[in-house]
Image (cartoon, rainbow, N blue to C red):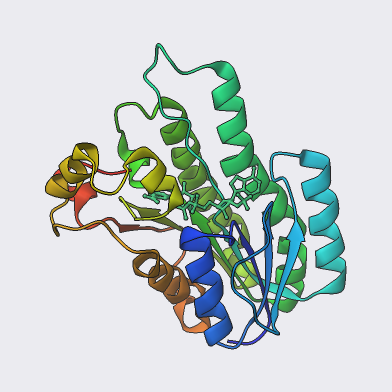
Length: 241
Ligand code: NDP
């Protein structure tokens, strides 16, 4: 794959795996998040960014769009504020929507014009199985369902210019995000594993492979879709993150 890819949230977990596979595929990769990436590569660069900061996100995205031919965008950065309806606050909702949804829209707005000019672009938004509904996820599921809505709408607006927009919706994946809520060896983690049809938690590479498939130039007939990489949890309706 040729060209520049922007990946948000590549300092750990799924985003790190996506960045690594994009480097393996030959891309230049720009990562945006607060901490520097753990991996080092001559074609990997990093701009520190708090993605909930509208002005900073817009300014940096426009600077990158002016300097680099960004052809691939992976809106991966995300965070969860778990809690029941009684526990969830409007501030939780604002934060999670800002990070997961608003930042994704700002980045798409910045990079879509260059993709339109090139008549080629690939955008993948990181949703979650929780978009289907999951207890204790009122805020998170709203944001992840929002990303599916953005994906479906922008697929229609951008398709004529060779740009595809898809979502990947992971189930439980062993990353910092998941380990924080489900410590290794805990009963809570085992209960989740027991509820996953394939009988294990996913790996970042499980998800990154689906992202790379959607980013491939050959995948131009797939747009507006959500691929669940969830060990079957979206089918059984049990477990999930
Ligand atoms: P991690 O916590 O490992 O990674 C999250 C990434 O997002 C980090 O690189 C982090 O970077 C970045 N990030 C978080 N907050 C901000 C912020 N305010 N500004 C900029 N960057 C930020 O999580 P995962 O790899 O598990 O999650 C990746 C995506 O996958 C998320 O969208 C998540 O919702 C989704 N997902 C994960 C599942 C799982 O089970 N793990 C299941 C379903 C969906 P830094 O801290 O350096 O800023």
